[in-house]
Image (tube, rainbow, N blue to C red; front, side):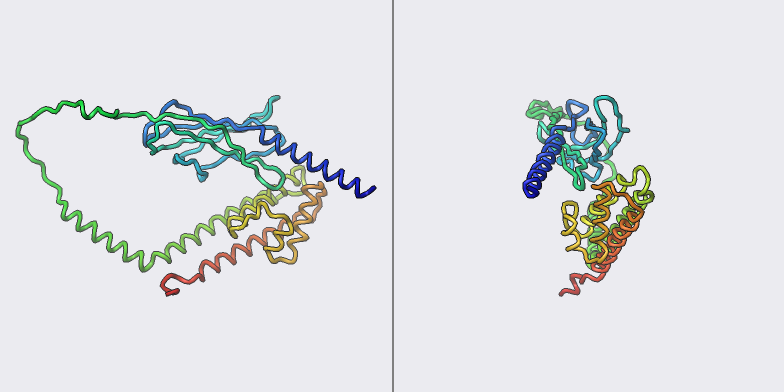
Length: 308
């Protein structure tokens, strides 16, 4: 009887999960261009909005997202508005296009937080027309006028000198790159890694500042998601989709398994306790150690000349 009840319970949970996922996919963001036509290299705007249940959390793309074939130059976000119809989030993106297609399209994803993962939901494709400033065949119909008026010549540009100077600068730049290019590139990567770690530490501290109050469970869940996304980018492994066991198999830390189980109990069981802060500190220590290991690996990696 107990095994039968267990099977029934698993089937019920599976059906519930499928229903929630299908409900989230049914909600689709709305995206449209704010103009009918565009010109090459001139900015234009694209509006994205998403009405959803106030109980779910959504993430809009920022300027680092992929808007191909367009280049994004600016993003403006607006405060969430909530009424009887639900919550409405919206943003306006300023884009540039250098494509020659007469009709160009765009669809943009919005990420929905579902448990410990994020689900991407795309807007419907919207089209925009490229405005042609020079029509085909127009040059063949132009009549050229002869002008025999003599005008004084302007001072000519010394192109040989400019070419020589350009070659000299190119040679110097190539020499500097061959001597120091790999070192400079590595230092730049270390700097970017440092900046990302500083940003992670600041956001993680903000979320874990109070995990015993009214928003304690919500803050703990967001902190775990932030931690996974940071490790995923640092280690280049899909930690956002890993289970607790898969995470502990990839990260060697004796306290990590107990910390993750404790936090899972807080998030999914509502069992908030004063040990939650200690468990989150374990996650912070793991991320810090991974950051240090990656810096050491990058700093000690052999150069091209060294490998030769």
